[in-house]
Length: 115
Image (cartoon, rainbow, N blue to C red; front, side, top):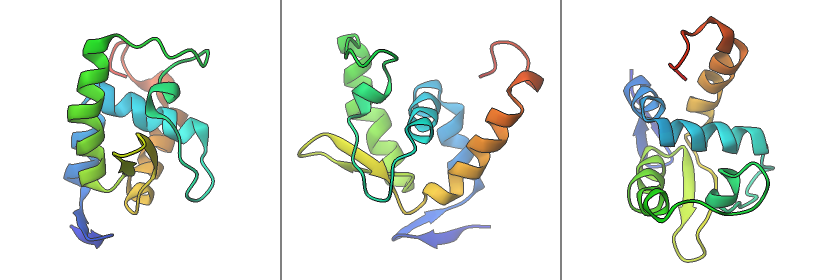
């Protein structure tokens, strides 16, 4: 069942489509791990690095900024400010966050390589 969230229609299909893509899934988990407060904005490239050093290959950056961020913004899971390159949780974040929690809590139950 779809419902209107922040001007976007969010349904289970959108959640699973975003989670099916490894780059989008990684970004959503990184955002959840960063645990942003309210409208705190974060640099998506920094979220994807473990040591705070932004050293993402150019091809990955192109995909991030031209495919994955626009898609997650379209779903409403994030809000992406294209001007300053920052993201924060979107109006649809509460639709995807519980699924991320369930996956994280049951990570050991998934076959190797699935996540």
